[in-house]
Image (tube, rainbow, N blue to C red; front, side, top):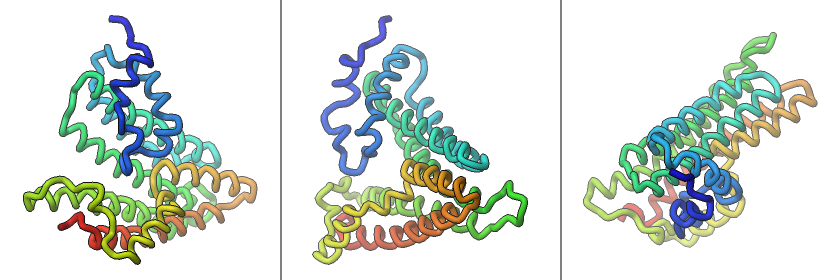
Length: 259
């Protein structure tokens, strides 16, 4: 069977709205990864590889970001970015293959969400362990490992807060939440949310952004020959994660999503 062209794939696997989803599409997907994934799709659509298998592969790459970051020096940070980019690539490919074949799976959606949790957590835990200097000649400073794990816990809780809205509505017989319901009822909360959205500081605890930050800080630390900026970065991300966990919870409670 001949491979479909990119032009044939695009309208099917990128239907209207896929790239414009308010909370479901990453900026890197819109900017470049969806174009790369189309080139991968055409080699996979006629194979026996299933969308769920691709989702499992996506999850593996996300988890591998943690051990990759433990490699000392800049190369560990580069490997971490590579693992997260491969995670993002297959996060695009699995859904696109599913749309082309019309093979939809509840299990696939579930594993996709688990993979998103694990990737974000892996990057932050790996960053903390990296800052603890596991392979250094001096004493291992477990404070940074603790702060990295704290940041990972916050990243997971933020996703859980969002997902649990759907669980709560389902268990009480309510229909899925509408986008308009996420708008805070309080004008003060709405203003705070708009300010946070403009600054986008909360995105730093997501896997893609965090891995890029790790790489930048690794380069600076390589020049300085220490871990000062990596450790500062871990502390900042832990603070952001804790603050965002609280603010996100308040935002949900102040909106109409639980009504």
